[in-house]
Length: 229
Image 1 (cartoon, rainbow, N blue to C red):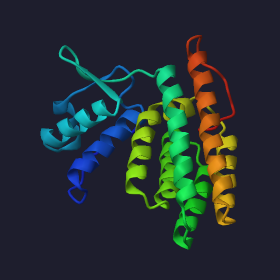
Image 2: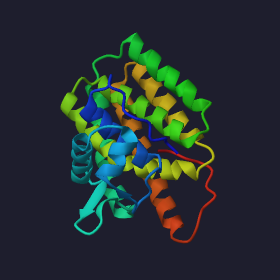
Image 3: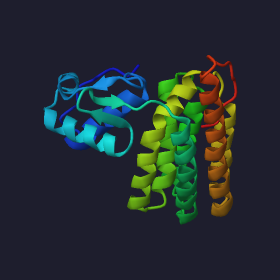
């Protein structure tokens, strides 16, 4: 579980508070249905209530939280319909980002290779989620389209709860690691179209596994040992 570490003053406050709350939700510190209060988060993160309120309202607008007069903000439950609607959009947008990459410099390629190496040796679900997020963020940033990257980031935020919850119940992620390596190989060879197809397939495969997992949860925990997300 992610600890509720205070925000450092070196970080841009508004965005730092938002990202910390996203990680708390995604890592399972706040489970689906759990309430989030301005006062509680303000104390935990050692910031004023204003940036916390702004972050909660932003997450409500993004579909991560719900709000009622009686209960305040709560984490939305995991829903198969939401996953089925979000994953194809993410696949299309990240495919577009990859097709838009004009070139990957050695710094970006080195970062992508380093993260893949760390993923290959990482067994902690939360750290795997962080590394996976960093890998895809590095990949899409190479497109140089800030608006596209923001839309992808919003989708990833919404889907992060599904990804991490799924990863907690999956012992091996060889399929996802292999797909990442194939995407990187295509980009290194300069074949953006093939890399984009692989990215789209990666997310569609991930959707299929998450949807199956969500269905399995209705009957009890599963023992699936493969994984792509």
